[in-house]
Image (cartoon, rainbow, N blue to C red; front, top):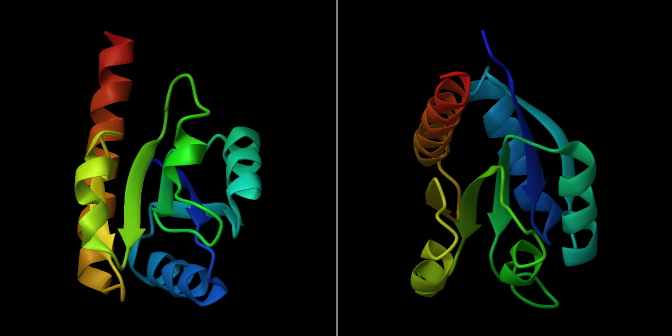
Length: 130
């Protein structure tokens, strides 16, 4: 069974804790390897941990998460945007996310987003092997 590494990015610790709990309880194929509460730590955490999946809050205190994504030459991880502001969907869709999860988080929505992300990862890994 493959285990997928995950980094959580949100400026509110309560949201990070909620996602950790949902993931540990309902997503046995995921392992949270890091989290970040600021844009600066988000970038460094993703570079250091090289996760398979990143849950990203869009509207962080300082700016929007798009500033972090623009620093990557290639985004080689699956993005699941987590937001309370659906108005960002159009801009966020430019980054080809696996899915969006609306806050407050529901277990069902998180599980569905994870399913979409892991399906993409499997397909990418299979294509690399061919």
